[in-house]
Image (cartoon, rainbow, N blue to C red; front, top):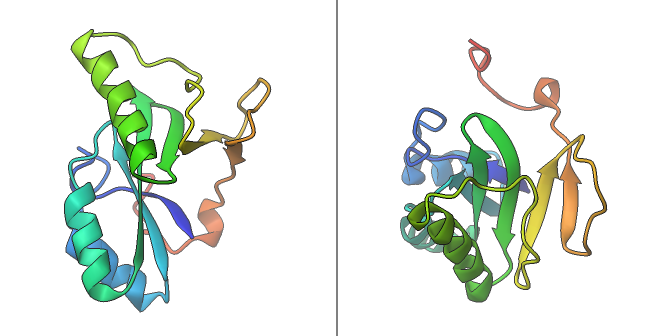
Length: 143
C-alpha cells in the first residue's frame, strides 16, 4: 500500500490530479491508497469520491512538514482520526505556531516518522523506510 501520495494540492510537490492518481494506481494493481497531501486535506473528499467510483479503498491522511523538513505523516483510521489531524493542523495554523517534531498522542490516527527519528514510539507510531531505487518514479525526481 502506498502511504505517501501527494496530489496537485501539495504545492510544488504534487502535480497529478486526484483522478489521474487513482487511475494510475489502478493501472499498477493498487487496491487501497492513502492520500497525504502536505499540510492540508483539501483533496480528501474528491479522493474518496474518485476511489469509491473506481473500486479503490481510500484512506486519508496529512503529511506534516515544517518548511522543507518532513516531520511525520498522520494516517486517519476513521473519521475521528481525520478530525484529530485537521484539528491539530488548524490549531497550529490559526495560532501561527510552528509544527512540532513529534506528533501529539492521536487516538484515532497512526503516525509514520521518517527513518532516523529518535525517541520512543507509541503503539500507533511507526518508522517509514524509503527505497527510491525500488520504486516506479520519474528519473527527474531529484532534479
